[in-house]
Amino acid sequence: MTRIYHNPRCRKSRAGLEYLQQKEGEFETIDYIKQGISQEEIRDILTKMNISPSNLIRTQEDYYKKELKGKDFPGDEWIRILAENPRLIQRPIIVTEHKAVLGQPPENIDNLL
Image 1 (cartoon, rainbow, N blue to C red):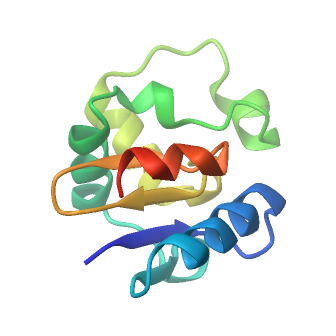
Image 2 (cartoon, one colour; image 1 turned 180 degrees about the vertical axis):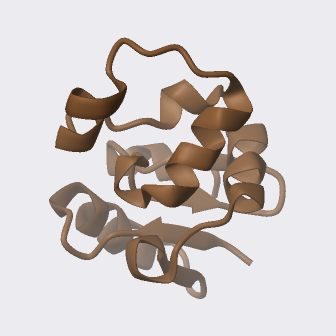
């Protein structure tokens, strides 16, 4: 089943959700800010997107700018940081059984469907 990691307070995430609703009948919505996201889920997403953890980071977040900018962490440390601070994760992320994409712009979702 298709899943969307979504933050309802984010305009870009809402646009991705709306686009997915128009394209896909059934999917699971995960409010990862409230529900949290595990390190295993992040690893799965990174594998399916074929990217490194640093490519998933929202560098415009204040926490990143104040605490993390310019620091070099190994991949597993970035994954831990992302799991503990889910607001740092780019959104929305749409995941299928074998692939995942960032729904910015929403048309990226077409690469999955």
